[in-house]
Amino acid sequence: MHDALGHLVRAKRREVADLAASMPIDELRRRCADMPRPRNFFQAVVDHGDTTQTRIIAEIKRRSPSVGPIREDLDAASIARQYHAAGAAAICCATDARGFGGSLDMLESVRAAAPVPVMRSDLIVDLWQLWESRAAGADAILLVAEALRECDIIDFQILAVELGMTTLLEIHDVESYYRVKDHIGFPHPGYALLGINNRDLDTDSVNVTQSMRIADLIEDRSIVVSMSGIATPSHLDRLRAHGICIALVGESLLRQPDPGAALRTLLAP
Image (cartoon, rainbow, N blue to C red; front, side, top):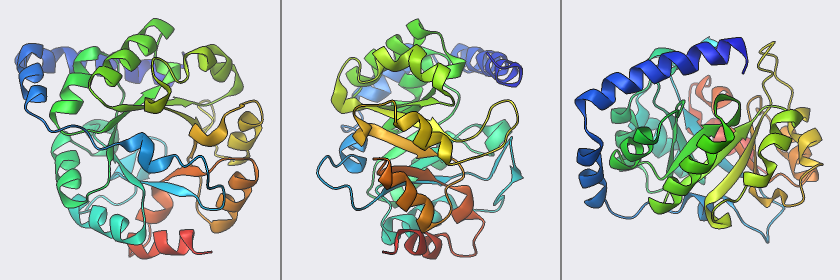
């Protein structure tokens, strides 16, 4: 595990242990039992028959550890409505407080504001967080492959399917792809996506061609999501040329005065 990522994982484990001590998992299970079924995140972004249009997972976050402040004063519900009106297929909400300025309250407000599926983006390190995510209304969760053991990935995927949530398994390099490739689509292919993050964990540099290089190794590219550094229609064109028709985009939209208008421009033919 990369040093910086290892530090974040250890801090997140301590944070989750404190939260779990104050919220028993049985209480979360009771809350989940009262929740309506999740919106189908997988179905919203995957279209096996259309390779001419990119489905956008539009991200909401105030800042990130890699780039610092992005839009500290954002109104998450308002931006969710803008994203939906502009054609976002789904929304990703960063809920980590320390690194991203997020919260589960923010995720709940996003889900109430727009009818599209919502994914929780956080550093998931414990099964308790999956119950917490579903109880807060998350329709999908992000799993960072480099932060997890293979046995954890499997356990998280199984529980996510039991809870009706889609998983987006995120990798950063070819080595990580080969480590997890046999777990992609487990235990049910209709609930699992593979994210290729274009950010180098060692240097923090971003290059969209990373998605293209790794995608060339993948047989079923309909479930591949390109993440980080996507800002222009030409980026989407190049990704589609490599069979990638799903992209997660946040920073380039949130830095614009009108994120909804920015999304329309990105999606314009």
